[in-house]
Image 1 (spheres, chains in turn brown, yellow):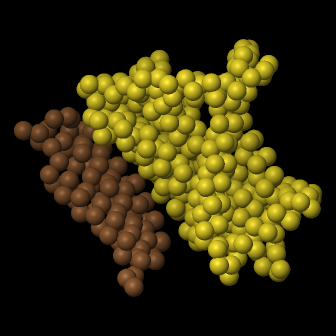
Image 2 (cartoon, each protein chain N blue to C red):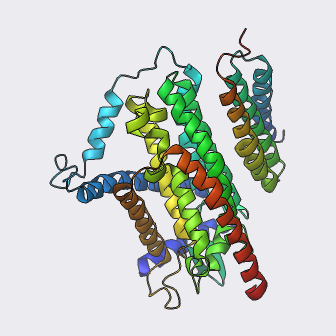
Image 3 (cartoon, one colour):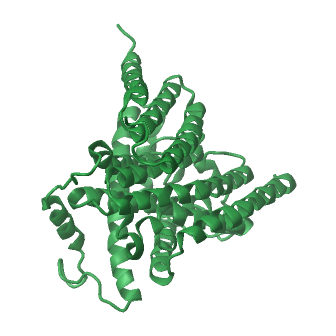
Length: 85
Length: 351
């Protein structure tokens, strides 16, 4: 009998690995920023799986709502197409 | 109201932790609540069209479904569903498709912690909600922040100048407004000494928070209007300047879903105002419940807040984008810090 918690854990890990690879590998810098946001959100998923709801919510509040928006703000100020070549 | 009590008694017996199927039935209730709030958003769209018509001396929808046009929305939805699904050639496909999904996800996640009533059964209290969380108010704040990404995705992904301007304006606006929103919520949480919405409402059974703490109500209300992007603060889609802002390139059901997500956000925001500041399911202050079930009080208050939103849309002009950012940083942020001081004083004196 395997522990059923392994299923959501594997889903969240898969999302996190794929999005983290995308952060480095994506062609468009905006895609990188959004992949970064998704990977931060999946960290919140890990916290929920560890029964640390407060940490999960603070992770969303600070990393996704604060730092993610700051990253997008920076991207928006640098202009489109940079880093594509 | 015997029937209401019976239904609630039955529901709560199921929700009590000991019941073997409580998880499943909670899930079903979650679906029902999402459906109910979905319906609430539909009602809000209809009310908005009707009352805006009244405010502007028009009739509003009056053809489909009798004199009052109650079926107009269904006709509109059918029209949107049958329209061609266009993705612009210049668009960033993934962001363009993902934006309405993220917007709706944010709205539905917010619904999960809204409490609707609080019942005394067999000597213990049970809150009628999908998920009882002891940090529900932080959760609401965190999840509502995801909607910013949806609008930025739509703005950037559309590949058009107007959409991009809308998305940029949204980010510039929201950075200024999330902070006072959060601080005014936290100041209320300090007074109730809890981050749980259920306990915050419970603390208002004698006096509502709007009476003890009117400043936080004003700050929260203004920030909420900016958060859901309604008219004094809807620079992200101001039609005289940037066509429709981030929604310019959307058509058909994608447009419908994106706008529906906005209305969902507005309905959940109205619920938040009613719960946090207007006493939630408590009846009138001092007088009490007057034998009306709490859920009806909550719905009446929510509808009043929604009507207020509609009224501001009909009555107020739109701010310029730099004025909005100024208002957020130079006016609302200091006021919200003042709220924090005031609630700390109240907490020290009466807490």
